[in-house]
Length: 180
Image (tube, rainbow, N blue to C red; front, side):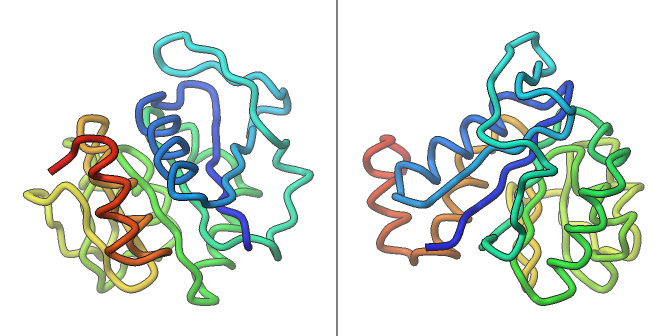
C-alpha cells in the first residue's frame, strides 16, 4: 500500500488537516503527516501543537499515492521544495488535493489551468486558469481535488476515500461518522 502525505506548516487549519487524516485512517489508508517547518512539532492556526509523523526531508515521494495540502495559511505557498514535489507528482498524473487557502499553491504552479476548482472565499483570485466552482464543497477534476474550507472537511476527506477506495468504502466511513 502506498502512502498519503498530508503537509503541515505553521498556521495550518487543524480541522482540515486532522479531520482529513482521521477519515483517511478510518478507511484503512496509510497516512503520514509531514512537517514543513524543520521541527517535528507544528502549531496550527488556533495554537494546537501536533507532532508530525515525518519531516519533509525524510519523505520518499516514490511511495506516495496522494499529496494533501490543508489550508489555514498561505505559508504553504512559501515552501519551494514542497511545491516542486507537488508539481512533479501532479504532472505524472498522480492525485493531489488541496482545501481552503491551499488551492492557491496549485494555481500558482499552473496545475489548475483549464480545470474546475474551488477555494476559501477570497482565495479564488489565486486559482490561475481555473473555472471557479465556488458553489461546491469539493471539486474533482482529473487528478486534482480542491475543497472550499473547514466546515466542509468531511465532504473533502470522504471524496478522497471514494477516489482511492470506491463509493462503498466512502459510504461505510460516512455511516460510521453519522454523515448522510
